[in-house]
Length: 248
Image (cartoon, rainbow, N blue to C red; front, side):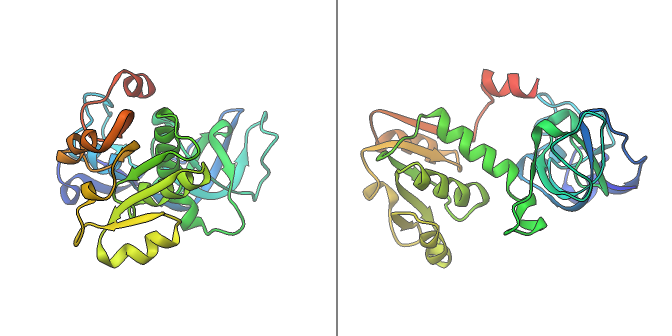
């Protein structure tokens, strides 16, 4: 089967290759998914560049990708919650990395049926951004009536985080560019800050939480606008012990 693989660390244009490998076999608790769509995320290009090789060492060549949607074409002997032909989506574990492939074998414990009202392409874009948003907001204890700033509201993580925070009953500030203001408003944000024309630090103040997807000065500035006891969750910087334990 055809797969997209990292063949060396470096720039994307020089480090990826479409190769042929054996179709994966499945274990008793696995299903085999015929891929309809696969999602790529910042972690993927960071792995290609070698930025994560100390934390996630790869045996090259290594197939890229963690998010996938498709149709069940085989199932293991112990699988009871999926049938052949089911439309599914998943974010595969690190040890099963490699979703930009014609077929993906994965344990059913991390697989869900695809909702009927979204496409394969849309569902393949959900798993990692959804997990990132939910785990981050739960880690800071987001609750009803909290005031939260979500940076980059029009990005993959931002669009999901806005909707999740609103579902939890929070008051949501978000930053975006002029061209995306209407789109982000439609997601439910209470105050959309156009960073091209407004200074978010003068608008979003006394916050319970800041959801920092940008890093650098934005991380430091977050501590200027949270209230005493508030929390900052950032995606930039060195991994902490919790992240190291997840990746093994």
